[in-house]
Length: 243
Image (cartoon, rainbow, N blue to C red; front, side, top):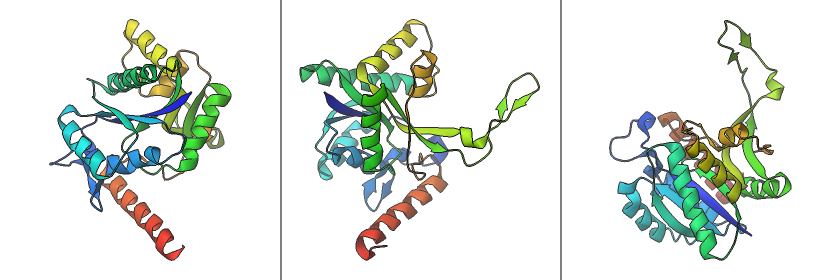
């Protein structure tokens, strides 16, 4: 059974306020954010292939960057859809096609944001292990602030902070399970799921959880980019100076 990453890089990054390029193609030290992200999966020994969902007009540039940075495990690059949910579905279909080409019947798929370049090898390993254990895995971090739930009847529910977690990525499943859920949602006309774990929860799947690194942020604003730049500098200092 193979392990496939589906990396979503189809957004335009309106909150980043960039003029020349989408946020996933912003560069740090001459390398686009999306390449930092893909490298994490390309270098992981348990990942067999990577599918990237990309803005169609930026596919030639991405393919050029894949060659420049010697990325070897990307098996398909496909254009995004009309929504985030549709784009993920297109990536899952590409993964399904690749798996069938390999003569396999199923795979574990790790769905990840192209602008989350700060996960670790351990996060990827733990996702794969958790899917094998219970069929799904949602990467989370503990809530560090109070969560307030508006009941829309004039009342508020305030759960204990210790019971709250923030869902991040990767979100991982058996490929057959998540693609069947997508096709069911299409048949029912449900196109507004915010992410894969919301969809799978709606259709009754028990969700396994692992705790990922706190720095596993999604780079959507200039502040996020500055945090990313600082974290890359920390990692470089660790390699050079040992701290």
